[in-house]
Length: 140
Image (cartoon, rainbow, N blue to C red; front, top):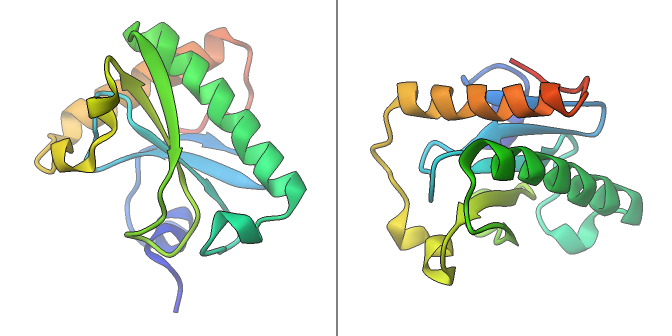
């Protein structure tokens, strides 16, 4: 059975995408830790990041860095954090999050009632920055 993320990637479940290439996608979290919280997800279903190939991990990290730069430009946070947890969905995903303190990476603080309009607006801001960076992988 496909994972939740595969179903989003395949378009069976709606997602708010900011990035798409042959190896991975980037879409917005529906329970953001902060505005612009983006998930970078490989197209291939892999449960644990240790099971990614070195090439896949390198690519995901590079995309996370690029999207992180767009988040930095769009939201001007103190830092942009990057984290792999992998406990809720059995499909590797990297969280790229605008942060002020380490507490901003606590999932207990996720906005589980975030308005879809706010998520879409944050995605637009990230896409605008990716376009300004000359990226062609922008999706949405």
